[in-house]
Length: 116
Length: 108
Image (tube, chains in turn green, blue):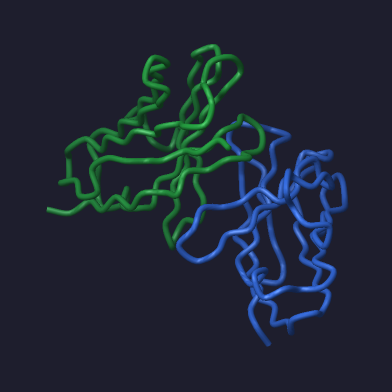
């Protein structure tokens, strides 16, 4: 059974970079596997951050103003999310999910707090 | 951007009862709508995609219907494990994928 697990910095200082990894187990991310990142905060609900298509194509939420990068390391079966120049508004639970239209597998989520 | 609106915000239901949740899109999304269940402290779980197709392992008491701008999720006989927040999500025009604000199903 496919499992996704997010990990990374749980506390990030303002203006620094949030870095998360989504490790996939129980299956390979080769082939047509696409990964989409979301975040969820009480005030904004579920928000799309960006995705990486199985071809390597990426796209990001314009509201993040060029601060985000998503990449893949197929040798490690994992995806990565970097969000630069964070502010308190980036405090949220971050999820990775499999899919590009609807999302059938999700990581358990990781809470990232932006605070000095 | 397509806006998804769910109603009601909260519904109080007794175990064994039938409950119907609504989701409306600001423009047609054809059948490209998914429903998710989210329990406290957990990730969303896909229940329904393409408006009415149950995801793998989802019990038959969950059913989805609708197309265009109006959709419903019905739980035919609510079980204790079904108390949660339910979200609809459109994928007709993406990105962005957009979600409704959620409907909380609570114990009456």
